[in-house]
Image: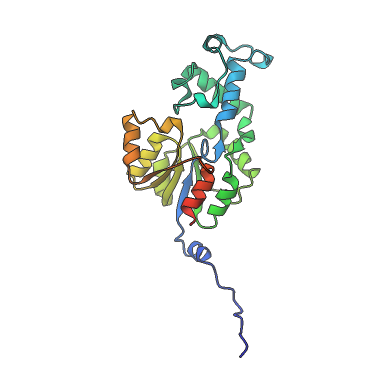
Length: 239
């Protein structure tokens, strides 16, 4: 007896979930998670406050960094705030970010290894929102970065300069990829599962905050070994 193929193609599970609004929503932090921000920020810092070869930045006082004896490196960043782990003051750090924005360098940031591939894969199963503490004055550069990033689904899903807990609750987000310890704990305390990228600035066991994070049932650390953060995320979320 011949097999009669159905004239209508059956929808996959993820298509059905999207159709009926039951898809799981996930929040994704930008800097340090989707975007590899530190290397370019540190290069900007060294250009302004250590190196002497760029006349454009000759007005900046390089004394403190010269006394420190070398340029800044990624491994120096063991605290979330640069002024807490480098010789730079908060005013100098603010100036670095101000110049970085004025020179539109947010457009040139590189994605984290495997981020684009995995984010596009995740969006087949989850509805992703990109939620960042960046100020509103770099919204245009942030959207411009997405336009050239290779991420397929980002329109109307990039949110800047807001309370991440409030944004997540308003949009029904139940999972969040984050790297800041304080934010991770706030999200977890509001019943949001956090996948915390493991960095030196969120993994000092002597800090009470980190002790709370390490025992919190809704916070799970994601390591960068033996595979990248994002390949480990993929393995965790799509089994």
